[in-house]
Length: 138
Image 1: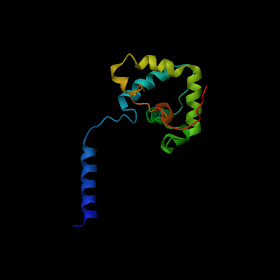
Image 2: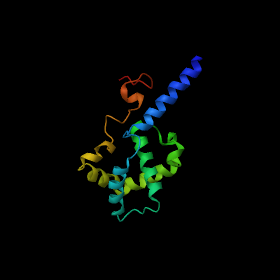
Image 3: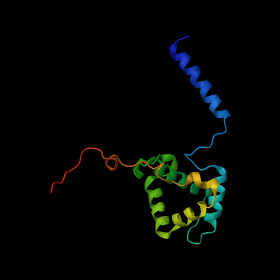
Image 4: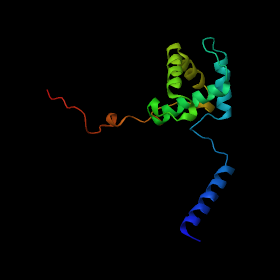
């Protein structure tokens, strides 16, 4: 058996084992979290949810951006068009929906994993003291 064939066999085994494990992903909302958030969102008078699947995809996209620290333009296509997701995010921010949602989920220990904090948000390299940029001398 060649090294390439061995690698492929090991990869198949790892994928099969991973599919058997019930893992909670921090990369997307699990069903329980989604149900809790969806029930909250349905009570809000200032938003309409026509398609729950699209709303869930939007929320997963927002979580992806906040957790990776990436620019909106880098949002993977599976979450929708980056500009549409960004504009909706901005509308919800202006209406205070994110603040109300944060208040709602902060009371639930089961939903605390979706709240982005400094342990999951990556800073831009210049925020960490990376070299470069203009220096100002006084």
